Amino acid sequence: MRIHDDDTDFIPTLSFPKSLGAGYPDGPVTVQTTLGKPVRFSGRGLFHGVNAGVRLLPADDDTGIIFRRVDLPGKPEIPARVEYVRSAARRTVLGARGATVETVEHLMAALAGLQIDNCIVEIDAPEVPAGDGSCSIFCDAITNAGTSTLIAPRKYLRIPEAHAAAGTDGERIEITPLQGDKASICYQVDYGTESPVPKCSLAVDFTPEVFLREIAMARTFVLEDEIESLRNMGFGKHLTGRDLVVFCNDGTISDNSLRWDDEPVRHKILDCLGDLSLCGISFIGQVIAFRSGHRLNHVMASTMSMIAGRSLAVRRAA
Image 1 (cartoon, rainbow, N blue to C red):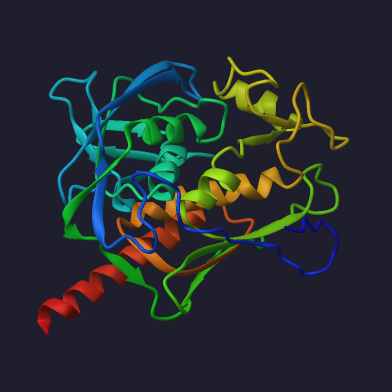
Image 2 (image 1 turned 120 degrees about the horizontal axis):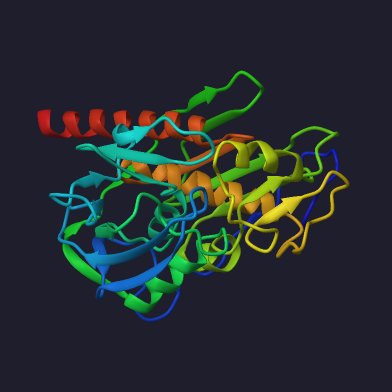
């Protein structure tokens, strides 16, 4: 694999064998999956610092991913679907029935990356634990629980035509058809010549093994100049440079080091996968993103959900 950071348009592509070992079949998954057994983990949330306990439970066919706030009266449930996204800065928040759950994107990425279709997420606090800012804490839990195949066929959305969304500052996301049975994300990070975050690009053809090896351990990053304003908003007051990647103005990393030279783009791919999984169905196609953040990711997830709905309506009508 070649890492490229200059001004040309080369984008490295990652692709590995599909076998991950016990519990992960070779080739495309044809039936739905869930966890092999319940599993627990805990930790403090990234934004609010509140300790949260999480229990991932196996679920039946066609359940999807559902968050359950066990600390609230009636234990309200929030489906992990894009129609339940609530407006929030720098993270993905879901809300329903008077309850919310914040910063779900890393857990959603782990479930999507490891091809878990159905799961109940019991949580006793408003925000999902951050771990080390990546999704390794969730992947460790999921691989410890193992996978179990169900009976119902796994649903895939094969992208029929290109769709795009753009922001006001040049950011963009597009999804296009792709031959074969692959899901691919191609992402470009370029915040300009004055940004301490290095320009980098990467394309990933997803399998569970690729996700674990190349994406799952990529951590959240922030600029040193942003920290004071975030703390003034009440966010991240408990964090230090050891808890995430902080880029100083000169491009160095505060109290930490990068796991890859292009760790920022790997984390943006992680976020993108987690956000797009809120469309509620696995996709076959290629996502091409340039500086896309949560808001644009949600727009694309909504578009994908509508495409899937139309496709289902056509099949039922036939």
